[in-house]
Length: 105
Image (tube, rainbow, N blue to C red; front, side):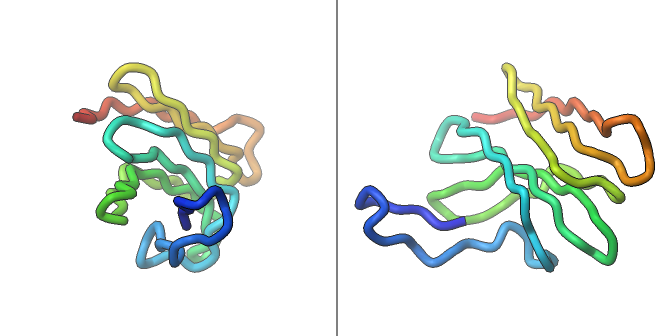
């Protein structure tokens, strides 16, 4: 993830979401308090998987909150102290759904 402070004329060096990341794509982000973002993305390790976490843009650090193997195209949302993640699952008609309580201060 890269950011700009000059309306897109230049960008910071991209931050890696996860040190184990191989081919992160399809990222979906939600802004939360304190210069932080909830982010969900898919990766390949060795097959498709979804990861989600809390990214602090001040420290440029990511706290991984969860993973799901055999999933892709994630969407993340937040309501109160709950986050919801949905994603397609490989070879299954049902969507992966997770609701997780987190404490964001």
